[in-house]
Image (cartoon, rainbow, N blue to C red; front, side, top):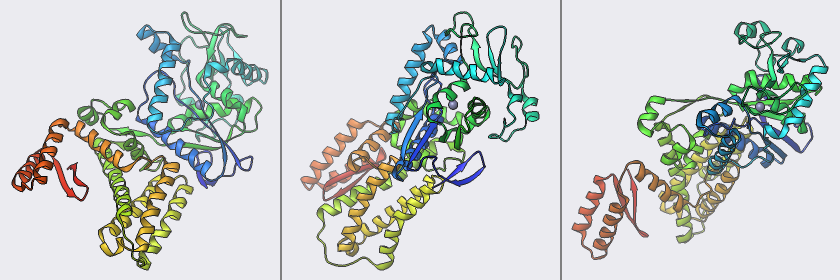
Length: 483
Ligand SMILES: [Zn+2]
């Protein structure tokens, strides 16, 4: 399996430290607000990477932390007149709710910063003893960046370049503008813990060094590209300067999400939080949209791209539904499929695997699923092919392969009929159509057709079409959809 390693800036073969085992630590959220689609992208991608590692036979330990004490949490608590811990707890619970809906599997360990205060202080003590950190008179502890020559290796930045961007905020007692905080003296009214340097709380970066410590060296350390600098750079400096040979061997970062804020807010009410998003789209649509792009490319998030994702999902689920219907009804003649069709059909699952092994190329893997769907549709449209023994086998395999897509991508695992109905309902809601009125017109049309009153049935069809509702008459009765 190839993975793009930010550390070497190239794809590398994934070889875990302990054969057959793998450890992955992904930086989690700072729990002060509801998650937006950028969080969804990161969580869905690392979920697929975790699924893939397990599928490839690695016994994976997956750790994702929560930052539950931080400037932003304290600021939010103060502005809302709430307790900081309550703010953190609320948003950790909301994270779980959102991610469960997106079928993001829980990590094996979900440590919280406040559970690691003694370990955090221990790292500070070690770094101070080694001359890599220092305490100030007011009780802050800083990492001495110039005492760590490898600093900047991950982000590829030199100290001079960093110095140009560094500032000392007035009141700070840093030796050097490059230094960053490991421990912060508590201001009045802030949460604090007793420490050798007085009452204080941890800085942001140090907590990940403490929470990842039980698993070092990590095979994979991950997060969004925005974390490469300074967060991950600082994590490496702390963990390695504290005496560890390496923090992680593979550094994996997912790309940014760009939103067309103006357009989004007009059409969806500024719906860039996951929960606002899921008022208008099914969770699987968001998950599919995220996986339809390569994880490292920037993604432009628009309503149009979500509509396209919805359409693509509908195509696959419709084919799954029709395949199972055809299987249930079919009478099979003993004939094979045309050779080229059979060969293409059999080659696609391997291409799917190859795509996922090539730096988790989910966009390409989904492309293989579409190719399979196209072949299945071709088969369903052709009476001879559909009735052949080879066709029966192909339809059965199509349904079976969907289980694999569900296991590996967390997609296409719903019951097709139920999913398509849910999808239709959410589209009806998005278009502000009257579900009751549609149901009434459909019912009346069914009665008209049963009584062979075709003029009335046609008129009802026209009235439905005015709301954008299309009706198809099938052996199972009328099937309706939105244009
Ligand atoms: Zn982190």
